[in-house]
Image (cartoon, rainbow, N blue to C red):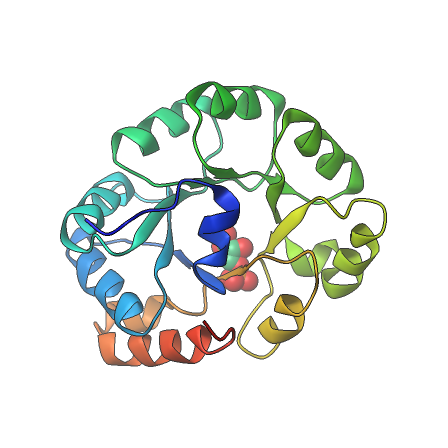
Length: 213
Ligand code: 3PG
């Protein structure tokens, strides 16, 4: 197995874009991951929104070990345990309730807690996390919000997600407090349903080019 970073900032640095992935059919998990990795996108967020999500992480970990496979849409402490049992390398949540943050720290799981306001950011920093998701990024104020947060709270590093796509990703990545961006555009439901792995690889290659290695 290739080396897997265990620090959340190092995971963010491993890919400019973290694809937000929804797997409906388990047989799509490995070919999708292979297409993204072939295009140069190594960090994957498999959302815990479907019955096969945990099995998808297990399958990708086994068949595509060069991927850094995380679990998204973690909303409660038990989800952290399930994601870790499945072998997820990191986790992502849409928000940051105290009980969830405390459990993540107890389990020492690399994590991006969701934030949307300065108070969220301050609470998450207070728990000891210095990397976090800004969600939903567009509705939270997008580029302007991130620039405003960089003044008083420069120690927070963000993965803005929600309304980010290939057209605006470069502007987000140029900000001093953005480590990577998240988005569903690299794994669209229609291309997965059509098993068009070539098209997904091309989307990944375009996204990987957003930041030169
Ligand atoms: C999600 O969790 O589905 C993300 O917010 C994806 O947002 P996007 O579809 O705007 O990329």
